[in-house]
Image: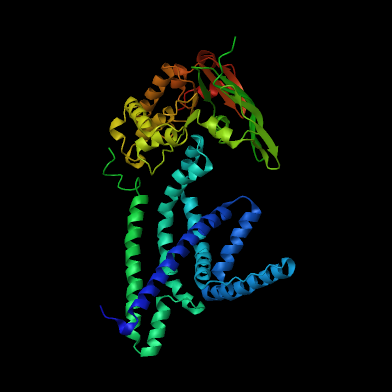
Length: 238
Length: 256
């Protein structure tokens, strides 16, 4: 393969960072999304308000601003905290906000809010009778969620999750701003040094496209799996 | 001498939704082998009462005793609720419910529906559960539909499948909530036939229905509810053939 003027291996490392960042952020976003959906459907007013505050705040502020706030603001906050520890208890520690962790947390937080909306709609789309049967047969809330609500909900949530995932994947490119060496940053550096934008940006675009295409395939399989039991009824029914 | 435990006893069940008192103190004793049928106009509270039995609705007052085990309640700011939800889950597993709209889990095949609660709630070995499920499906005439999904079956098949799911729990009492109301008329017969078999083999059943002829055939006791009160109760001959109140007479009169 072309060695891309010696930038090949670094670009590959950058691509790996992109994938790791995207996957970890997705996991965090899904967990936060499920929690947020539960919160927004909760009858407890305080929990409901917290859920609403979170989604409103996150969805109303640009991703980049949030990322900077969390990365720089987070560092300052942690420094203040460790300073307090030092004055109060004579404990001297220094915690450096790791750009990768900050990236995962920021992207996870942002997309957790979007996932929350996706899951909320999906939760509500599950027919109440299905959960009622689960309760009536003695299932615990956790069992009923795992075996009934979740699999039934996924059918409605998957299109939204897939959409969010595609946007999330591309949002990872923002982390180059806070100093994380993903493939976009490597390509940008290489372009500056060589004045050959196409040589670096086209491979980068191809990698994003490749990940996106693989994801489409994966989501199509998941959709098929969570659609079992729905549709195609006519050819069986008699 | 130790008395045989009564499968299900309800004492003075009251329930209100907002300002409306739906149940005004209803009691019932289901002895082993009893088939108790509740009839009444819609809004009389019969379904709500049935749903209080397995705590899908929380009664505001009254006691429930299932096989000698009394359900514990406590009163909180939001109202009365069971003290111990684990106890509720255990008791629900002994009271299988058959719903008006079947409520088979739509992402599972019929066989998976039948083994789901025995395996995951009762902790039965999967292999044994499958064997028993197949026998039950055979009994309700659906063995050839074991691998079908609910959407691939007719309403009558789904309801018979739901009865197999209920039987798989080997319940103390079976609760039927208008099991034939959502069915096309020509499918009602098959479901009633399965239920008649169950009554004949001595299953304890509590049934909410509009099928008066069926109630007359299978019931050991009929309860006529009106606006949350037991208006008449007794044997089918007492209640259905010799109604005392004008209201019940009108209720039973053939509709044109």
